[in-house]
Amino acid sequence: MTLDWVIDVDTHITEPADLWTSRLPAKFHDRAPHIVRNPETQWDIWQIGDASPLVPVGFTAVAGWPEPFPAAPRNMDEVPKASFDANARLEYMDSLGIWAMALYPNVGGFGSQAFLNLKDPELMLACVQAYNDFLCDWIAPDPRRFIPIAAMPFWDVEATRAEIQRCAKLGHKGVLFTGEPQSHGFPVLANPHWDPVWATAQDCDLPVSFHIGTGDFDGEFSPDRISASGVGATNAYAAVSLFLENGKQLADLLLSGVLARFPKLRVVSVESGIGFIPFILEACDYTFEYSKIRLQRPEFEMLPSEYFQRQVYGCYFFEEVAPQRLLDKIGEDNVLFETDYPHPVCLFGDVRERIDAGLRGASEKTRRKLLFDNAAKLYKVDPPDRPAA
Image (cartoon, rainbow, N blue to C red; front, top):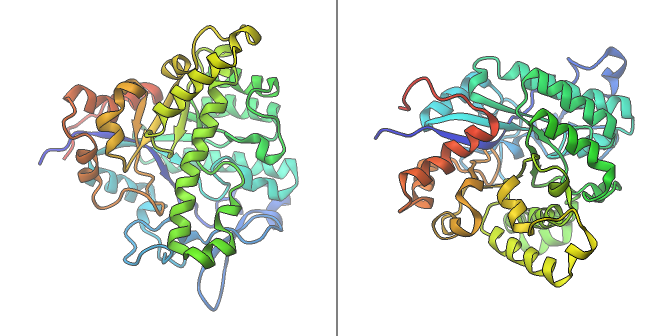
């Protein structure tokens, strides 16, 4: 079977143990994020600051693991090579006909929030910059086929502006930002406090990603829930909850006025699915009119759903109902495809079967938009130089 090339807009790198210890200035070495291996269990766990140990390394790289989650690789020796090695990743991509992959982090959190544990702004910024520099080095085997998404020091607006500009020059293709700044004690998205960030992303022509899990979601894995439901059910509940949290962030964005004030800004809701989007759009439009927001907010010249159509993208991976039945409500120009490799809920093993099931009956034009063209346009991905296998 001949495959058509696909662009995967959400995957993750399992960061190497020396990422920060080898890149931070010497004065930070004793406080750099680092891996701690339990000598008895052989589990590798990242430690950032004096916070409780984070999720074990293997929990974010379970693709292909023979036992169901929460069973996972214990350490860096056991995680799949394609999770941390770019050449192995390229081989994996070729096996599936994936031309390009967007790259997101694990250790710093899906919005850089884990670095807040360091409680030192200079060190926090240095960690973000070290990660972004690492990305540029990591993609060196074939930069055409990777979409580096830059982490941001969102706690500092001026530092974020500078980092967006720096990363744009380095070749990053997008900006990772928290969709829930208020959960970390910062102003909500609508607050003009963030306007310099949106303006800079717009000026640099870099889409802003709201990845799931950028808020505080420790409560999703409470001991009481795990005891009552079991680890597997708790993980499933947490995943669905995080999808829906991005729905709330989308509503917040659409009603914030940000898209009206920055008409060329593009925003991507990452790893959250697309099935809830028609309801969010309909609900936002209804409550927008019901609340007579136009009388209070003259910057709104369109309905929230129209701003979505102009500037926002959703990403799907396992869904079959939405890509077959709801594209006319979402807009086929506003949908991207992802796998979330190598995370616990990622597509793995049956990736092509899942793609075909989700696009059963779709026209070749629609299929190409969702799987390649929309992402290629958004992230400026050059056309493949050869056919897929």
